[in-house]
Length: 102
Image 1 (cartoon, rainbow, N blue to C red):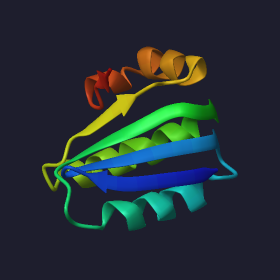
Image 2 (image 1 turned 30 degrees about the horizontal axis):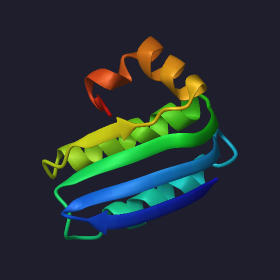
Image 3 (image 1 turned 60 degrees about the vertical axis):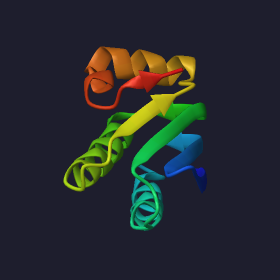
Protein backbone atom coordinates (compact mmCIF):
# COMPACT_ATOMS: atom_id res chain seq x y z
CA UNK A 1 0.00 0.00 0.00
CA UNK A 2 1.26 3.42 -0.97
CA UNK A 3 -0.42 6.60 0.26
CA UNK A 4 -0.08 10.08 -1.21
CA UNK A 5 -1.54 13.17 0.40
CA UNK A 6 -1.69 16.94 0.06
CA UNK A 7 -3.66 19.81 1.49
CA UNK A 8 -5.17 22.28 -0.95
CA UNK A 9 -7.78 24.95 -0.17
CA UNK A 10 -8.44 23.50 3.30
CA UNK A 11 -9.13 20.05 1.82
CA UNK A 12 -6.92 17.06 2.58
CA UNK A 13 -6.60 14.88 -0.51
CA UNK A 14 -5.51 11.27 0.07
CA UNK A 15 -4.75 8.76 -2.69
CA UNK A 16 -4.68 5.08 -1.70
CA UNK A 17 -2.64 2.91 -4.08
CA UNK A 18 -2.47 -0.87 -3.94
CA UNK A 19 -4.25 -3.33 -1.68
CA UNK A 20 -5.92 -2.54 1.64
CA UNK A 21 -6.13 -5.90 3.39
CA UNK A 22 -4.94 -7.68 6.53
CA UNK A 23 -1.31 -7.46 5.37
CA UNK A 24 -1.32 -3.69 4.83
CA UNK A 25 -3.95 -2.61 7.37
CA UNK A 26 -1.62 -1.75 10.26
CA UNK A 27 0.73 0.29 8.06
CA UNK A 28 -2.20 2.03 6.37
CA UNK A 29 -3.90 2.83 9.67
CA UNK A 30 -0.71 4.30 11.13
CA UNK A 31 0.00 6.36 8.02
CA UNK A 32 -3.56 7.69 7.79
CA UNK A 33 -3.56 8.57 11.50
CA UNK A 34 -0.34 10.51 11.00
CA UNK A 35 -1.70 12.32 7.94
CA UNK A 36 -5.07 13.01 9.60
CA UNK A 37 -3.36 14.45 12.69
CA UNK A 38 -2.10 17.40 10.63
CA UNK A 39 -3.96 20.69 10.77
CA UNK A 40 -5.07 23.11 8.08
CA UNK A 41 -7.97 21.18 6.57
CA UNK A 42 -11.70 20.97 7.24
CA UNK A 43 -12.62 18.03 4.99
CA UNK A 44 -10.99 14.93 3.53
CA UNK A 45 -11.32 13.45 0.06
CA UNK A 46 -10.04 9.90 -0.34
CA UNK A 47 -9.30 8.93 -3.94
CA UNK A 48 -9.74 5.18 -4.49
CA UNK A 49 -8.94 5.12 -8.22
CA UNK A 50 -5.73 3.16 -7.59
CA UNK A 51 -7.09 0.85 -4.88
CA UNK A 52 -6.86 -2.60 -6.41
CA UNK A 53 -8.31 -4.64 -3.56
CA UNK A 54 -9.95 -4.14 -0.17
CA UNK A 55 -11.23 -6.72 2.28
CA UNK A 56 -13.11 -6.46 5.57
CA UNK A 57 -9.95 -5.43 7.41
CA UNK A 58 -9.59 -2.49 5.02
CA UNK A 59 -13.21 -1.53 5.60
CA UNK A 60 -12.44 -1.48 9.32
CA UNK A 61 -9.47 0.83 8.76
CA UNK A 62 -11.64 3.31 6.85
CA UNK A 63 -14.48 3.16 9.39
CA UNK A 64 -12.00 3.78 12.20
CA UNK A 65 -10.61 6.86 10.45
CA UNK A 66 -14.18 8.05 9.80
CA UNK A 67 -14.98 7.81 13.52
CA UNK A 68 -11.84 9.75 14.46
CA UNK A 69 -12.62 12.53 12.01
CA UNK A 70 -16.31 12.62 12.94
CA UNK A 71 -15.29 13.45 16.50
CA UNK A 72 -13.43 16.45 15.05
CA UNK A 73 -16.38 17.38 12.78
CA UNK A 74 -14.31 16.72 9.65
CA UNK A 75 -16.25 14.89 6.91
CA UNK A 76 -14.68 12.27 4.67
CA UNK A 77 -15.70 11.94 1.03
CA UNK A 78 -14.81 9.23 -1.49
CA UNK A 79 -13.94 9.91 -5.11
CA UNK A 80 -12.96 7.85 -8.15
CA UNK A 81 -13.62 4.42 -6.63
CA UNK A 82 -12.23 1.48 -8.55
CA UNK A 83 -14.83 -1.07 -9.65
CA UNK A 84 -13.90 -3.29 -6.71
CA UNK A 85 -14.14 -0.42 -4.19
CA UNK A 86 -17.44 0.76 -5.70
CA UNK A 87 -18.96 -2.67 -5.22
CA UNK A 88 -17.81 -2.89 -1.60
CA UNK A 89 -18.97 0.63 -0.70
CA UNK A 90 -22.42 0.01 -2.20
CA UNK A 91 -22.75 -3.44 -0.64
CA UNK A 92 -21.76 -2.33 2.86
CA UNK A 93 -23.52 1.04 2.86
CA UNK A 94 -20.27 2.94 3.45
CA UNK A 95 -21.42 5.69 1.09
CA UNK A 96 -23.97 6.67 3.75
CA UNK A 97 -21.20 7.76 6.12
CA UNK A 98 -18.51 8.63 3.56
CA UNK A 99 -20.41 10.01 0.54
CA UNK A 100 -19.15 9.58 -3.00
CA UNK A 101 -18.40 12.81 -4.82
CA UNK A 102 -17.61 13.47 -8.46
